[in-house]
Amino acid sequence: MMHQKTLQSRTCRAQAPRVLHPGRAVRRVCVTRHATANNGLGSSGPGLDEPIELINGRVTSGPDLSVEVNGLKLPNPFIIGSGPPGTNYQVMKKAFDEGWGGVICKTLSLDSSKVVNVTPRYAKLRDYSGRVFGWQNFELISDRPFELMLGEMRRLRQEYPERVIIASVMEEYNKNAWEEIIGRCEEVGVDAFEINFSCPHGLPERRMGMAMGQDPEVLGEVCGWINGAARVPVWAKMTPNVTDIAAQAAVALRAGCEGVAAINTIQCITGVNLDTLRPEPSVEGYSTPGGYSWKAVKPIALAKVAAIAKGMEREFGGQGRSLSGIGGVETGGDAAEFILLGADTVQVCTGVMIHGYPVVKSLCGGLQRFMTKHGFNSISQFRGASLPYVTVHSELVRRQREAIAAKKARVGLANDAEWSGEDFVKNAESMVANK
Ligand SMILES: Cc1cc2nc3c(=O)[nH]c(=O)nc-3n(C[C@H](O)[C@H](O)[C@H](O)COP(=O)(O)O)c2cc1C
Image (cartoon, rainbow, N blue to C red; front, side, top):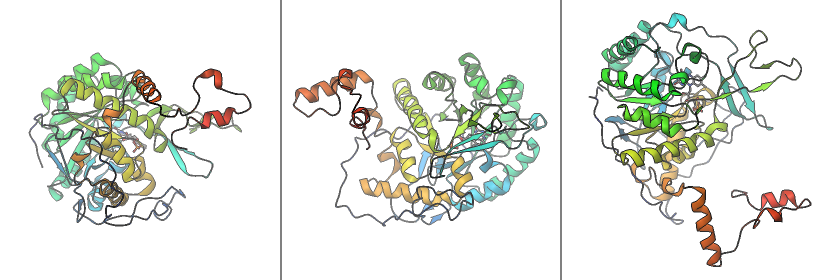
């Protein structure tokens, strides 16, 4: 599937959320099951949705999950996020065979000999029940020779002509290098690019990845080089490790990118070992801040996606630009949240490392279940539907004043003078939305 680089119309836009229909028949009763069967990591997760049948990534019944974004036709919105799940031919093939809507390969650069990984390079953060909710990595980009990866992607292209293959690439501050990597990936027939302006560890030491994504001047200039060379759509993958991700996304879009993807990982140190006094994960007794992913980052990712979506709407009127949401997606409900806040597609990386490639069938099942519950027949019917309800704090104050004036009961404390030392926990609890 080869597409010319054109700014396609962004077909979504928010409809007001529909009222839930309590009596509406649900196509299937979705029982949740615990995620211990296929992860091999001992996670006793909250449970995945019931898997459904997919043929070439397409659902065989129920609400339509297909999406078209920047001219790319995906059978479902779930894309393998750049990382270990897209490292080589055999894992990318597995992703297509299981039904993923698209695959983004592990980030490639022209000279992989500069990429030297260390082990251990991952660390898990668990809650008190032992469930993994945070994941740190300081893995670098692909350590595989560029030629080898090109050959594998060419083979994948031939074997899966209708499926979407996206090349994640990264280079140094060198126009020729960017032009070369873009041109050579296009020769093997990739459908689009995702530019890694966001890896927070290792690469910034070489002024790559996050170092570029944090510097608006360099970001704009490099995006200009890339878009001057690319004939297929380009997505800029943004770092959350900035003050204003929407401003950085706007720089990339103004420089011609068709879309943005967010978020890459958040800089972190998982912890300090209180026996050895060394930070974790420890390599020969030393550590370095890595990137945080998985469930713990989802609230941050949702806020960043909403900020970018609002900015895109303001500046581009929701036309022609796309947004790929990433961060902690494990269920169809998680994906629905990203789409409700304006994402066109949803990427999963750590979720594949924890649950394996078949999880796409559960993700699709869960997303369909959400859609059936609300009577949505297509993704475009609810994309961005929650976005109008993300507003500024002063607007909340105005609305609440109006509500109280209209004699609605006050919830929680009226002001800070009402906090009591005796009832402190109860006071806090009185203002929680989701008790
Ligand atoms: C082990 C690991 C390696 C990763 N490698 C890359 C990479 O090479 N390029 C990239 O753009 N993002 C990379 N990421 C970031 C993910 O694509 C994704 O943006 C982030 O992990 C948040 O999504 P998640 O919670 O679904 O993992 C990596 C993430 C992990 C956990």
